[in-house]
Image (cartoon, rainbow over all chains, first blue to last red; front, side, top):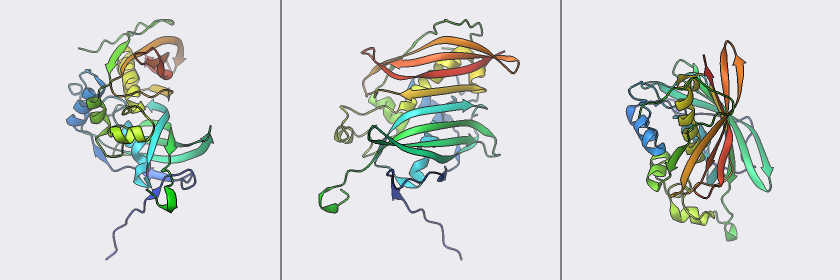
Length: 148
Length: 138
């Protein structure tokens, strides 16, 4: 019997990050609680549930968390975000996000990574396409070579 | 409050602003509560050089999305775009205002694309996020 695949996580630094690396999220069923929680968090009282539709940015965190599927992320800051909303995300859809690292660079001594992504339904139809830039805050090196 | 779908748009039109109270509770619901998170672990946020927990920049994109849906309804959810830069931290306890002004209207495959300059300000009048959003009207 074949063994299960186990992900090996690396600490995220500009050096460890590979441009061209691809990510895929787990599938996520869009449930009413997602929409209610989002509405509370951002004070959006639009009747999304009555319309059986989700706010366009509902799954943005699925995209932002892609890098956590391969890296240990010490801390980070979000610098830029771009969305193209192609089709509405609907209640009851099962959605996933795929992403690819397309650039990494240093600006004013700070490391950044750029990821392009699509969020799609279970048939592969693209709902949202976009790109985001995140600053990497690497783990400081502790004295005597210890990680922390 | 029902969403107002305003299809009469004019270049120079100022959109009704939104006010947002960014409480720690709302940040927790948005980002999840985790140890060693700058969003939900105050000691960790201090250690990383911030005076309090930070709201995710993504919350500001949700505010702008709400403003665009108020303006265009389904014309934002299908065919809309947004490009935002996060230029200043938003902290737990901040009070934000979300603003937009229509800058352009462009023909787009038989519809009209409305281009809105958008920004978010904190209670000190400092811009925390800036960018553009667009959407379609028939």
